[in-house]
Amino acid sequence: MDKKALRQAYKQKRKQLSADQIIAIETSILEQLQAINFDTALYFHVFLPIKKQLEINTYPIIDYLKRLDKKIIISRSNFDDFSLEHFIYDNNTQIALNAYGIPEPVTGTPIAVNKIDVVLVPLLISDRENYRVGYGKGFYDRFLADCRQDIQTIGINYFAPIDKITDRDAYDIALDRVIYPK
Image (cartoon, rainbow, N blue to C red; front, side, top):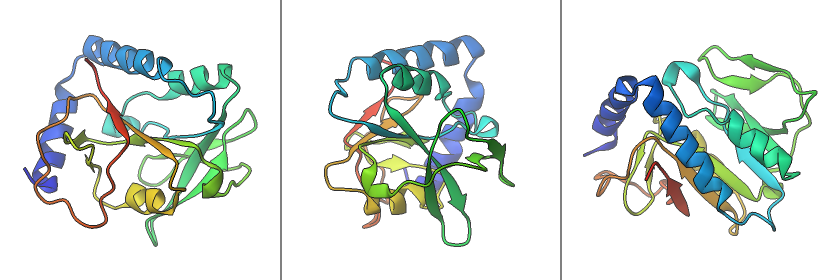
């Protein structure tokens, strides 16, 4: 399937998940993340979930990483050039929904992209080669292209990968791994 069809299909599949299914999936994803050795990583970019898009709740992941004394990085979207600005997320950070319903920092300490060690990447679906389909604006493709070569990229998803995204292009970046319920 192509990206447009996949976006439509997997947004609909998300809507069909029950509350119990969502809890089980989010628990499975957290447990899988907890099994990864992150000893050498300090800065973790974590997306804040967009509720209206029914994204995976990342707040338990953030709490877990904070217990490990990891630094959490979150982003603010620039819809003029589809880029992301990155900020430390701590107890002093104020969050507000932007015009698109995306929770973003209103305040915070900016951080350079080259500081980030691990990126948790939102997605609608991925394929077996760890290419992803997002919402189609390219925010994360641009962001990941600016990251260090040794960064760890981890997609988290409600669904198992499909065989192949048929219309991948030169801007698409394969993730190091994708975590989904087993």
